[in-house]
Length: 355
Image (tube, rainbow, N blue to C red; front, side):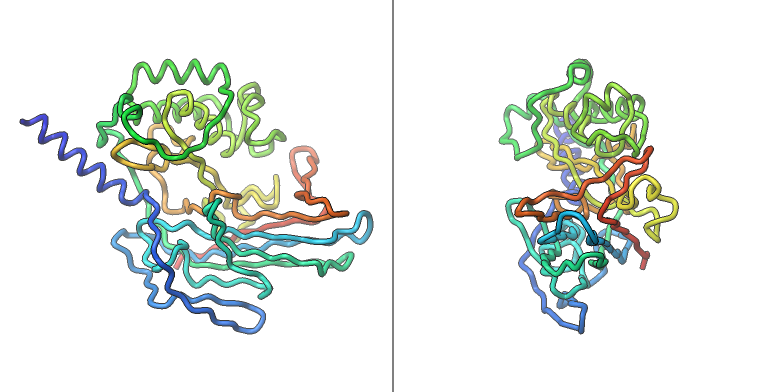
């Protein structure tokens, strides 16, 4: 009887803990107010109070784009700014996780792309005079608490995955050979939640942080060969480890708010849009749900600070596409000795203030 009682208590605590990590959606209640060049959306009946003690941030995202004065003409420019994902502690009463959302130029539109689960502000312009500098800005208020999951609070076993209908998650076709061996070894010795912690310990101990590497996040082979990478590589390596072990995982894009002005104390010297951005992940445990995890968090990988704010799963904070001669492409970034520069003067600065 004691074992049964203990199992029931642990299951209850697990569900209670994870109530902070599940995405909830409600019907929107909102009104639109136009105010000169800035279009402001205020949420009727919104409140900053929450059952979970949270920090409140006012976030500002500003993107600059310089139209080249010579060369191949740009016919069209599209800009996307991501908005926060709805979380369990949000009290705004809308499907998006922020309130007091504003943007300029007012030609932008607030959109929701269902297939990508993406709330964002979108601009599409053909007014591209050679040599002109264009600016696009979004502001929003968002609340975010620190959240922690205790891996000892779940009784999830490996057999539970085969007995459960699993949600959609990020799947990789090819698993790096060394990562496959590591995942197999840890899986044989640990329960699922403990295995995820061991995976994160391995990532932190074996991959040095280096935001200046030239290979993309998906190039795990290069990250493993050089033993260097940034948060995107950490998330991708953890994805492969979990894939091999049979643990559903999905990567998370969003904010890591640590430099208030968006410039100093960050990674601006490497690339102008790196500061205050981050990638981490969520893992799935049957009878619990999705749990956030920091791939470089070692034995505290399930402790997520308040400054981590999720946005959509489509792109990381800002996306830019240009059309030249009817062909769409993203502006390239050129490596100049460990620093990356855009020939279009692209700069996205994310700043914030605590309220």
